Image (cartoon, rainbow, N blue to C red):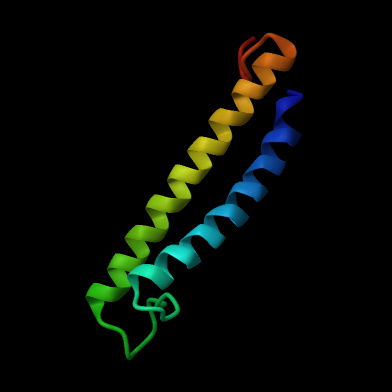
Length: 85
């Protein structure tokens, strides 16, 4: 129960970190341009779908890493795993 507010803050932080990481990754992969939006008429299907897949992968990986790190930190501090009864 005490982990929930901590987990919420970690979720916000992981979203910000993932967004920054995706922006940097897309500038490297996308030839320096901004990431396309699904409604960008001038962008190809391929480019939009690649950007979307890359963004999803980065967000999922960062969130998993932050959640796991938070749970490990809670176990070190309290001796219990978050969610255990």
